[in-house]
Length: 435
Ligand code: NAP
Ligand code: HSE
Image (cartoon, rainbow, N blue to C red; front, top):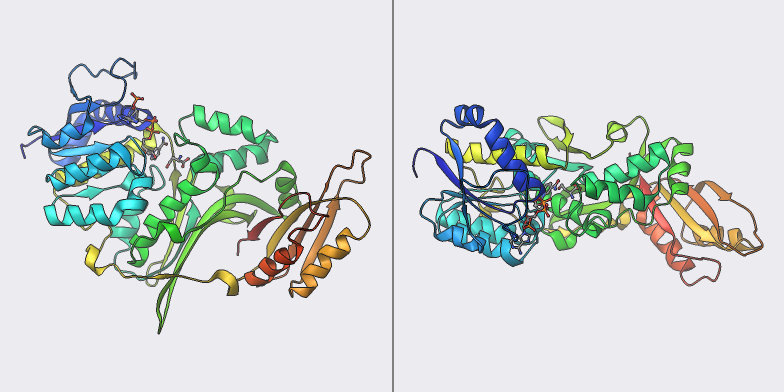
């Protein structure tokens, strides 16, 4: 390695162009803090002719980004392309296998292949860093993996997707339409290439599974995350939540318990009703928040921009500075061989209050059928409202209820009893109340 840390950058979109701007604008400050300059030597993307608002004339261009792995003038490869497999994964394998450092913002790839890549990094003795993959500009990986490294972390939760938080908080404050606000989030550079990953909770699930492995010392288990998104939330749900003193936020939550049969990992991404006076209720726009609870440090709350070019570039360059300084720690805070197996926890016994919204036919006997199902499943209803009234065109009306605290299995059973009912116009929406 020469004195300068020489990097090759794959992907010149929102984040890639942001990294070049940041290195150009803060180059002297970054070199001072890193102890040596950090310079881009080569770049790659799909379209060489595209104007990206940054000057690329001083960098070598590679049509095939995997060629970075064979370049002698590159110390670290930075992957800002995206996608769990495909060219990003091919690049990661080649770079790490060939002894190059590797920095990525790609949570999909880390969630699916993080253990394989961490093993490659370990055997090559080269750094793998992914701060930007979780919660954009927030140093959550550093905070949990290093700052809280002395703790047994018992629970993590938070707002892990900027696009969803932007959509929900804009709908809440302006009454605007879902599709309209989502298009705006896309134009602001917050959304994934496929925005269904954002709104269906998959992106947050990628991040949650990474945080869980890091915080609990368990093997990554993305497939075990229980995921639901925000696409079915209506303005009426937001209004009902507000009337009850809540706001709706897409949350990721994980905890890990142990008994004689081993470790049981609970991982869920879902929209929750959050009390209006809870710190997470005040997190609006593309902001993310990550809470970790350690057995000595107590509750840590990290909050900041969760998406966008500047904040994400800031996290990527922080990783580069760490590498330039020669800091080395295992990618998941423990060697891969020390990460423990866990089984998915059964959520049925967890106690919570639930908001249940149904779109139903407005005719006699409907509420009786619903309340009978709740009774038969042992679910106690705290409040119930029916909105709207019978209309000549037979449109369904909204029924929303909040349950008392009870095991999640009760609500699951009640909904199973109602399945196929001719009174239900669509599948009920269930959101749990936080706290
Ligand atoms: P983006 O704007 O869509 O940029 C993707 C870049 O990758 C583009 O430059 C594109 O080339 C290039 N690319 C895509 N497919 C390629 C292929 N098959 N071969 C070569 N180049 C290819 O995406 P982004 O928002 O910057 O996100 C990049 C990564 O950062 C993703 O993993 C994302 O999840 C992650 N991330 C994004 C944010 C955010 O706020 N945007 C935050 C945190 C993490 P062209 O430009 O030539 O098409
Ligand atoms: N699409 C992601 C989000 C980008 O909206 O949070 C940051 O990871």
